Length: 368
Image (cartoon, rainbow, N blue to C red; front, side, top):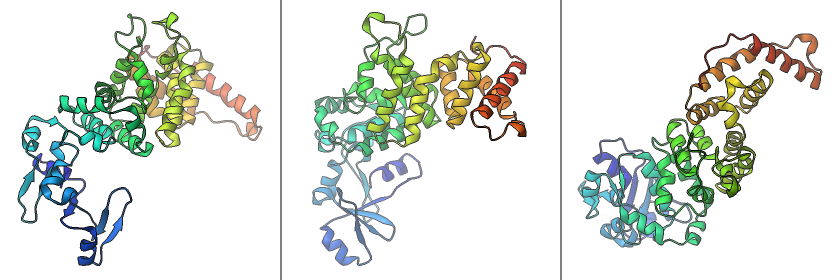
């Protein structure tokens, strides 16, 4: 049922197979003694490696109408015949994401984030106006009641999608950024910076950098977080955002915590907020400042996604130069007579690192 049938019709290999049965769960368990119930909020049982659940509404027709989207309201019956929602095939042909019923999103508000994730995963599909209307009709309290883990799970899937920014753009179109992504709602009305460098809002700039870093989910997350500090800029200073780097650290950490994301995301978001401006100026930094930035990013284990973000945000190839200079640092070895001296050892290593950067042949400024 559902997405597996949709994928078959699209010529894709289904990732998950769902099975449904008519009648009550008790009857199914009685007829299949080797099946066992699993889950809490949804009645599901596991039978011979298959997830099975009762048809919603007691019939296949009712179940299809109770699905989230028309293109997911499909099934193969016990005879192998295709059974679909009345609009499913037309929407599949036109690549349209349309709610399966007038109450599809209010029946389960978490579907809002699933819809946004589908939009990010399928860049050539259109989000139907009915979907936006249903999102706008939802109260923030309905979205706030969704378990954080469900929202975070959909976001993480969207971060790995081909057009990750469509996740936020779809939520914005449906006025559904609040409460989970309230910072981005605020970012809609704030200029990203002086017109010489930015021609859109903080949200628009964030979306652009997210798409430029697509292919590396952690880099996309860092792109989402890097300019969060701009929402706290004193309006009198706009379009400038002095000090937004430090303001963004707590906002990035707070967003990761709110969504129950792994600790690595909190660390990555904070690093992106704090250091992205220096990253774009790497070739022009003094050796000590350059070394400390390269080393902080390396020690965090985030060199690959961070420098990918830096490339996108600075519109340059600064990441290539950063990794070249980092390689020079990693080639340095602390002399044995400096081992085990605590802070003195650290200072000596930094001195040797700075010397290595000074002696490294210069290449053309990739950010120029």
